[in-house]
Amino acid sequence: MRGVPDAPRSTRRGHHDDRLMPLDPGVRALARDLYRQVRDLPIISPHGHVPARLLLDDQPFGDPTSLLVTPDHYVTRLLHASGVPLDTLGVGRGPLDEDAARTAWRALCTHWHVFRGTAVRYWLDATLHGVFGTDLRPGPDTADELYDLLADRLRGPAYRPRALLDRFGIEVLATTDDPVDDLAAHAALRDDPTVTTRVLPTFRPDRYLEPAHPGWAEAVARLGEAAGTGTGTYRGWVTAMAERRAYFRAHGAVSADHSHEDVGTAPLDDVDAELVYARALAGTVAADEAVALRRHMLLEMARLSTQDGLTMTLHPGVRRDHHGPTAARFGPDTGHDIPLPGAFTDHLRPLLERYGTHRDLRLVLFTLDESVVSRELAPLAGFYPSVYVGAPWWFLDAPASIRRWRESVTEIAGLSRTSGFVDDTRALCSIPARHDMARRLDAGFLASLVAEHRLDDDEAADALVDLVSGRPAEVFRL
Picture 1: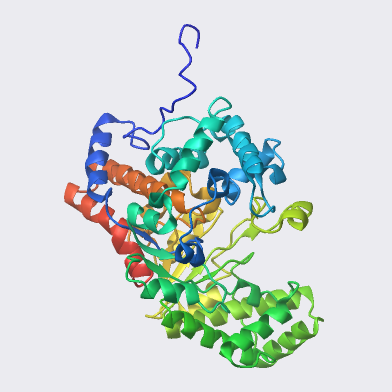
Picture 2 (picture 1 turned 180 degrees about the horizontal axis):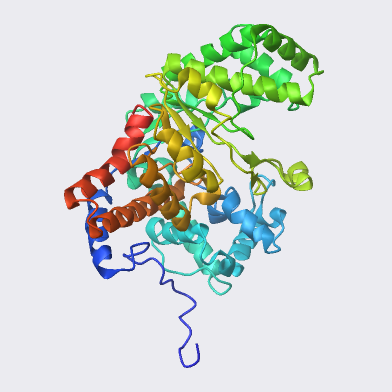
């Protein structure tokens, strides 16, 4: 604006005490009071992707780029869209030397403006200020100074992974693990008296439910080896899955996570399941048969959940590796997975007719399609005792989306039919920022209900504590 000087380029003004609070002064005051009651409660993270081995080894993070840029596809995808090549950011390159790490960091700082208004900007701001204690704003003129400051911090013992777990107040941290993993890292963490966080494995069997994917036959053979049983038949596959789930349960797992293009659960009869499975092993399965078998297998996973008590979480509706050339060069999880339209009502009906009222099933439904939240997910959770609506995920894990989600679900299914906040992140340092974001937004939402005389003050306070602690504890049986 003419006549108004530019803000200093070297400092940040966005990390305000009232960030994300309601604009109305009266509602904001109510929200502040509610937020203070949960601000320092322990973090429960029942679904995420921080590797257990990272915590067991407890080695210093190598450099700011390897911690905050290269592994975070939220960051790299938008930089790529702005003309920065992925290899410049270190994607797919392995450990970076000093020059490469600085080059990637400078690319982030030079393009800092492209993150304005995004959730990524919010998390990075919160990380830089709250974790590293700096008010330097990333930019071309501060890139090297900021890199040096962070690199110096990372060399200290206070910034090792386990120290950060304690500092962040993470009470429970769930990882994501392959069914054939021996979970040795989890066992070592569990038996280490200096580790106060419960680090829990999560059973993630996606690759074993996709008969059309390359390497499926080899994968199920490894599954059988890990389970100590054959997987040459469909019945053998089911037995192996049950054995591995039991192994995970014995090592502390509380959930099994599934992410496929859809949540179809149409059953096959026993004969057809065996025939299609045999064709899949032989490499002669047709595309429609492979989908049918995967849907049948997903139904089987629900049945097993009623027996072993693992909460079943569904993260469907993503076109993985949308850009083939990028996938071929850099591999999966490099920022070009794109959401698909959601469909739950009919796809899940076979599962819910069988197990939807089963007392031992917990089914948490996530979506990347906002249009199905009030049309399908909330109504399903508003009838079936087993169903909960999962917190906004991935592209929807952002302030405006979370506000819309909370309002849409609450009007139909209430607060209790939700999962509690799920950060679903690989970025350890962003976990406190994400949970704090959810607490602030929920405080604002509940404060608005109090201001509208739809809720009493004490009810709002109880509800907020329940969203932070009670919901994840119940839904994931913690």
